[in-house]
Length: 197
Image (cartoon, rainbow, N blue to C red):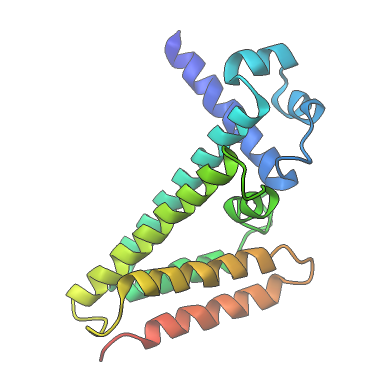
């Protein structure tokens, strides 16, 4: 019985994630949630506590899914810089099947005020975690002789995250599809170009 409840919760979180990712936190009403989740307000609050708590769980789910996809792409590359480049290329080819062309973390960061003690702090921490993974990949590339010793892995990671942030925000434009793919390719080729011969 508990197993079924977990399955139901994951299904609900998946539906909530799609809705929040599409509309954003503030634009999603309780009525929107009721319809998308097929749950009454009392059931939503009983299961998650609040709209913000539900959003927080979907944000964590989104970040974990993104993390696993990144690691899978990184490991599939023959070299670390190639894996990073392939990750950027995938981001530039966002499918029409996803709820939004922009990253959910980017949207949340832009939507929440600086002094938000909950969602803003969580979003920044999740983004720092991703940047730490980028830094680790750059450090591994350096240790394997792919990247020169003069490179600062943390600075490389911060720059890559800034480029991806810009790319994912730019993707929100309605006329951005081809441009985003081209820009992602430019970033990817620059990463590949840093590899030592």
